[in-house]
Image (cartoon, rainbow, N blue to C red; front, side, top):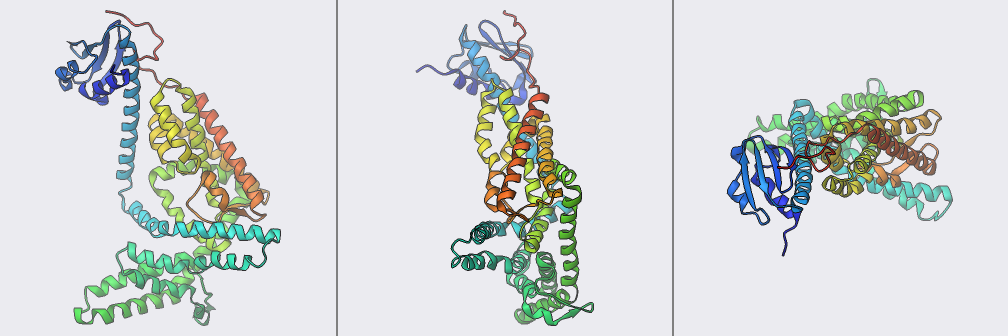
Length: 467
């Protein structure tokens, strides 16, 4: 069975030292000429043993592989494509590793741990969000009036007790006993807190929301750990839980709920004011900077803000704006796909990652395509900025678009969309934002991206010399 040119290229590349050792690729009538960074890394005997190789010639920092007329052209083309694809993949791996190193700071580590508190809640947020949207549609249409109260109860039950789950997860993530974190956080939503007065004002059940629950459980974790090191083992099972719940509970009632309530109210007020007064500018900035925020790991700080807005208003107005970054990424990837018609391996990568990108999972396109190539990452941000500005423009007109849950974006966000004027208008505005992001990301990338061509590569239009 005749060996394919691709198989020959796959066999040869590691034997000449891998992609990092290859500085140039060219061919003459019969030979594949490989420029080398370090000739000592070449395994000449193994190269000579590859089926289809007729001989080798070492010429300083150029290694010549004799393949024969005709076959050398196709082998060189496959070798160059494979080299480009592996270099791109290696660059993506380097960028991922660099991101991990950058994120290993105390602030980013803390943000990741806070994200770990909320991420396990996302499936329930999505499920309840979809049911809440369905219930709203049925109520507005006047359909199935006997079913809508049941749907409302199912969709709202989790949100009514989300503070308890936040407290449970907080203690679990930060090294405490999860049920103690949940017990302290449950104080936030207990109806009896209405009888407690703090700072001269009666508390309201749920005041402070998830932020109050997070702070309460975090305090409980530190109190518990303090007790564990000081209470005798014989008394630990009795004293530590009691002191933990008492101290953290009193601090929650007479400080944390009030303070967290002020912060939560400020978040809701600021988000509404930002969109109502500076909608296009806010959308442009949020949509354009979200991909860099993801690269820096700072997007995790937004998760508690999204959850607070959902708990307060029923939806987060920030997520649809930030989701536009994914639209810009998809548009940029499509432009690269069109530009690099002869790079079959990169085009295969894009085809594989594009469905996930359309559904809001952007990491394969970011690390596999746009970020390693450089400029397409910037033009993807431009597409995200344009889509965000589009959605923000309608917010100034009074048409707010929100998501009833966090997690999905792209097309997957449609079932979760709602707004102050109903889900249908919200979906139409969001779709317009996506199309704007796709179009601007594509056009900016197509106009500004010039794929580099290595001298002597199959795509190089300059004439080759023959030996």
